[in-house]
Image (tube, rainbow, N blue to C red):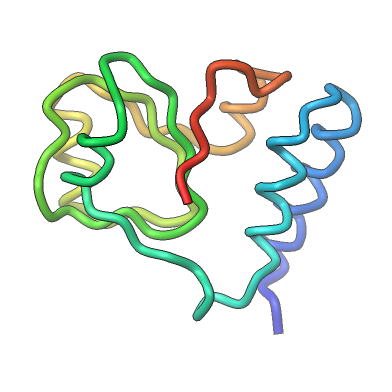
Length: 115
C-alpha cells in the first residue's frame, strides 16, 4: 500500500508537469509511485562526482551521508539521512522540498535529475 503523502506528492508533481509543460515533474511522479524497495540510494561522494558548484539536484530515493560534496548544491530528495543533510548545509548548500523546487523552477530547466 502506498503512503497517502506519497500519493499526494505524485498528484502535485503530475499537475505541475502538465501546467508548466515540464516532463521532469511527470517523471518524478512515476518514481514516487514505485514501491519503496525499488527506490535507489546514493552517497554524497557520488553526488559530488556528478555535480558542480550551485547545481540544483533532485534524487528520487534516499541520500546517504557517506563521503562529502565539495561544493554548494541545492538538493531535493524523497529521503535524506541526518548526516547527509548536515554535511550539505555545512558546505553552504540547501535542502528543499519538492514543492519549493517546483516553485523556484516551474519548467524544470536547470534541475538535474539523478537516478
